[in-house]
Length: 640
Image 1: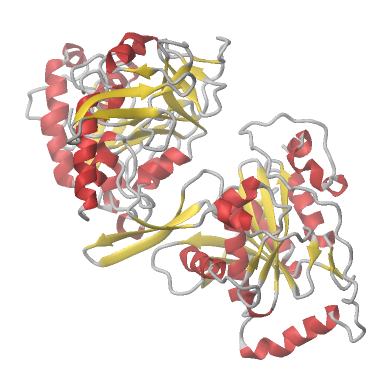
Image 2: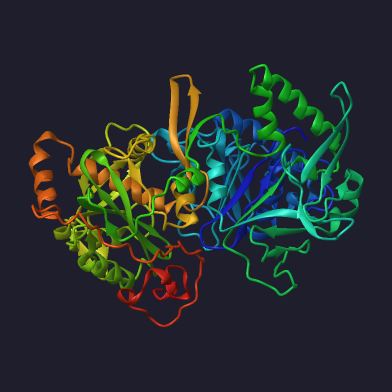
């Protein structure tokens, strides 16, 4: 009852459900009917179900060995004792036997292993069908320098017929929360909606806020004591009391963010009109304390105002606990953020795909996604001055050659007109290999090394410099095996993003200033502001890193890779001064071509399209025939 749970079920090759739970989860109207419903109890039920019904091998990791031992003694063994059906599949119950230890339980047809998560060896030599992680945020983010715990656990599932990885945790600090990152990566994220007693419209229970027109509101006396709590409906402003909520809770449904997918209380995914749908691959659910019938809304309000009073005195500890354990959200702590609206407000009326006078060099950063490639083109001038020039999206499966042919055509032929009237081409490109289709990226970089295409991989943590070393890699692509492939360059992403952030703080156009075109879409600016710099204090000192706060951040990633290209090309070395002089001479000849600047073309908003996980497949379209208006059109799915 008093532990927060924030759990995520991450599938490998099958459809499962991701769940986020706050504390004191409701025992009324939910799949599990129990006096205490939380992530640990869900795990126990799932373990028993897999052992008795599915006969699948499982492994469960706790943050430490002591936690693992305590889980077996206080949770697992009581479940095996009290659930009668487990006796038929666990013959070693109450026996001193190698099949009944603190580290493993051998069932008929399957086995459960329980391990601590701090040692890398505890993730080895295990072949399983189901991987479970409890309190993920309490694990080391990098287990003995071998990787994240959820990644290491996921490797144990390779080869399983029906693999499932389930990770759960109380969320902790924003930017360092492993479970927060997992939830953000879900294909669909759901909240529980109930019908308003007055207008019958569905809506979730939200915390709201003092300036929000809906959500929780409080009635207080002159001394500040909370007298009553109600939830304002966002549709009709009806003040729903907790009793009203309990009357409609059983008929509630889970609704995704767009509102076009429902999960009914029968466990079926449907449209809002009741038509059946296939279960999404990776789904996230969020529910917090207010949904529980065992916790009074009045007590939630009292806890909040107690935490708020301490926060006003400079003590954030209670508010942090309230945010984590009651609202089921990560605490932001000390963060540095960029506001998308502020960036868009400083945009200038210059056209995209046209180079201003002081823009001398074109660099490109490219990001790979599951169904597309994205290329961000930036102009660079003396002193690190930057301009947004172009952003291209090539839709298609990166595991197939067609989309790479389209990207190659772009890099070989794309030209941009300088203010002097002369065409410019992209000088160098950095493309991320750490996401999707790694071998395809290597093959692409190897083929286009003459165009200065670099395969890169981002890494945060122990960073020495933006250009953080390199290694030679091989690849296998389209039936060709290349043992001596391209150089893989390692990028210290935190340092690169720090450099760009410092440029955003330059207020006067000139060296170091970043120019944004007013033709860029609102989505572009949201992606540019999609990360925050979060800082936490540890025993070893302070640790800080950039972390996404929204799912889509390709624009920011492409920009980061351009910053790395600056470092790799050593653009700001004193010996490069003559090189910059030559670039200026090429675009600024002796005759004055700037007295009458070229007229700007009609403004066209380049809109980053919404991305579908499984887009339809229309007829093939040649990207060379597409115009800026096509970027958000139905022609985007021509490559799959």
